[in-house]
Image 1 (cartoon, rainbow, N blue to C red):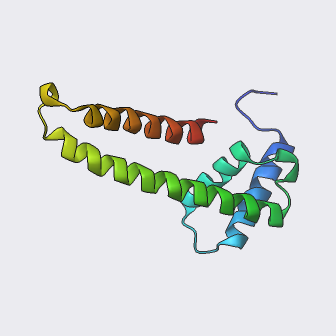
Image 2: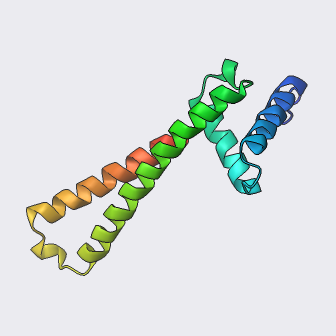
Length: 115
């Protein structure tokens, strides 16, 4: 089998997963359908991805985690925008701490998407 092609069972499982996501939220844009599917395959038990209730439960948990990360990222971004107008040679310890916190938030976000 060519490494570029998915086995039929893998493609069938992916199609079923995407169909269940659409059934859970028919108004979801296509790019979000694939994004949710990708996140579910990274963070959920693969043996249970055929169970609609389990998918809904994991999706809710992921949504809450993503919203918290987005809120945290927005707050840090605003603080960084304010910090950008400051002369780096005059940084105070709390401003250096802000930079460290921003790196940590970014690292957590990247880890979430690359697990």
